Length: 155
Image (cartoon, rainbow, N blue to C red; front, top):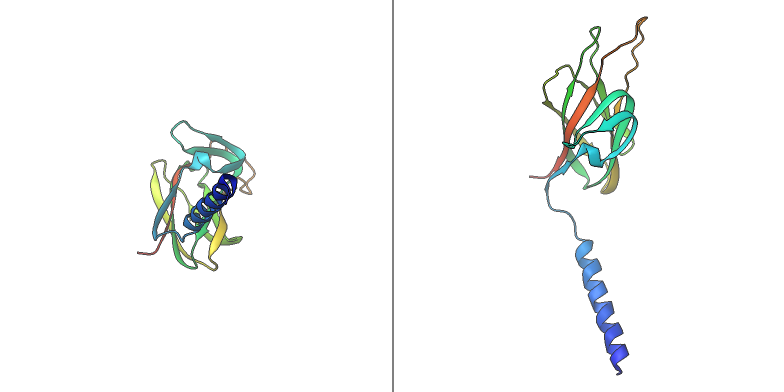
C-alpha cells in the first residue's frame, strides 16, 4: 500500500465519521431564532438588538428541523394599536397556517402556539404581518416588533 493510498483511505474514514456524526437526530429541547437572522421580506427593518420592526406588510421565514409530533412556537412581540386594530401575526409551519396572534400591547409579551409537526425533517416556519385593514382611513402608526422566536419539542 502506498502513502497516497493510506491517505485516501484515512480521508474516506474521516469523511464517513464526520457525515455520520452530522446526521444524528437532534435532541429534544428549544431552538431560539434571532428574528434579524431570519429571511425578511416586505416593509420591515432589522434592529441592532436582533429584533425586526414591521411597518407594512411583511414576512419572516426560517428553515427548522422538526421531528413528527407536538411543537410549541413562542413569539415575543409588541405592537401598536391604531383605530382599534392591532397587528395580527399569521404563523405557518409546513405550508399550513397554525395560528393567528393579535398583538395589542406596546410592551413585549410572549405569544404561544401549540401545534403538531406532521412530518420529520426540514420545514419552513413563517410569520406574516398584514397591515391592511379595510377602513376608509389608513392605519397610520400601526407597527409590529418581533423580538424573539423559539420552537420547542419533547420534554
